[in-house]
Image (tube, one colour):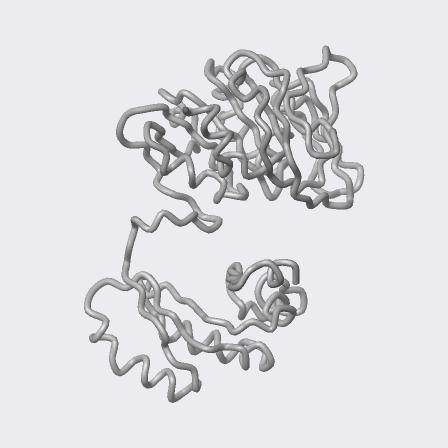
Length: 324
């Protein structure tokens, strides 16, 4: 309601499929959102993968009747070639469903839009600052790295094994949907030793911050217990309630490779079960970032910085401080 009051147009993107019948009772990212908003809906399919008309027809038939009634059109995405060759497919599909195909979008790689929860190009090309992002299986919030892909003088790549960190200037541990499981994967890939051996700046965001600490403690069975990488003297306990908030941010107290962030005031968001504090057996790290309530949500130890704030690279003040 706040978004609709503040904007003339609101576009809501679902996640996955609206026809996962085994999940329909608890689906809030597609069916629940459509119902709550009363939005006119479009069903989009990737025609490049094949079977697009069967996908659209089958999804239409499996959708609950009330949400199906909100459908205003089908969209064929990532089409290669002459759209006229699709006929009579869209016409037959409309005859079967009553829903028109309202758009055919061409294959276009230069759109500059953020990826969904999938991976962008594996290899960094060109010259400039090379930033390697650890690509654990359950990584999240990929959209916050999109501005780095478009930044002149910056190369972005994914790292799934130690050799992928060779030549990287920075290493980023992104957010995770399951921190303990992704930390176990990271160790199985021997990336833990490679990250520890990296001499350049290391940044952990949310789940990545938690991994960089000394320990993950999970008394409520939220995520799992695990020893951390030991690069920040912190300990994280998982709470049953998830913290969800947007906030203002203030950087201060940094040195070394992160000193340029000092004094930067910006904004971001927090999405986490973790509650992190200095480990009582170690010298406390520098508090590097505080949220609008004055709470510490970022810490630095030498080349390693961990923050709970998502969306930093979407903020011009942060990009200007770090990359000029």
